Amino acid sequence: MKKKLQVEHLQTLDYASDMRDVLDRMNSLISHRIEIANWEDYNYVPKVEFKIAYTNDSLLIQYLVAEKDLRAIYNDVNDPVYKDSCVEFFVSFNSLNYYNFEFNCIGTPLVGYGTSNKANRTYLAKDVILSIKKYCVINSANGISSDFTWQLTVNIPFSVFTEDQIGSLAGKRYSANFYKCGDDLPEPHFVSWSEIKHPTPNFHLPQFFGDLIFK
Image 1 (cartoon, one colour):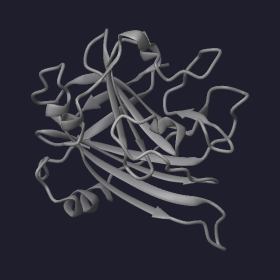
Image 2: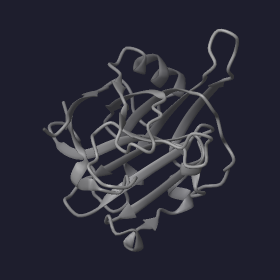
Image 3: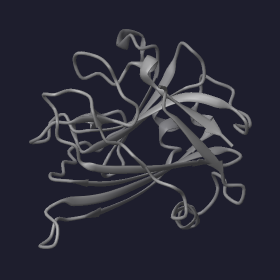
Image 4: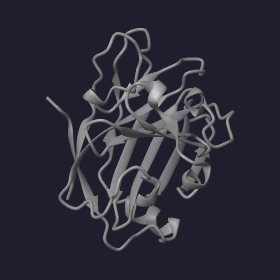
């Protein structure tokens, strides 16, 4: 059965809102787990939760992560951040193409668009990607817990969706998936919110996206 998620409309916030106000409002939202290890050879599952909401002109996503190892090598836009401690969000506004948003634990972004054929995918322009507002917090492992914990909150303006005309999301339904990965970590992992049925790790399979229902 296809996974579904209700997305709340935060009418008192927008893209121009101070990130402190965004964080305060996100605290009250329901969190969802990214916990499906789809491939037996990669069975490590860090503790990952996300929250999602929308405003009149932006999409808000917050990730809360606890994992054994932390890696943050990449600093430039559209670097291969999926090799670091990374969270991802893929969303499609039609049946053919989708956007992939990928962020490492220090907020370095990679954003692409196209079909599931990677040869047909292109990176979005750097200035467009840099319009995404980000807030990151990293806590090192300590004697109480052996895990590193980190949080990433992003405020994505609708203008980033350059290949679509995004007006009001209210009452709309679109397909998406949420992921946690770390290709070059000591324990590589490829974990998803919506299950992926494929023989090898691959997040670029929109047929396995779940539904976002915008309230």
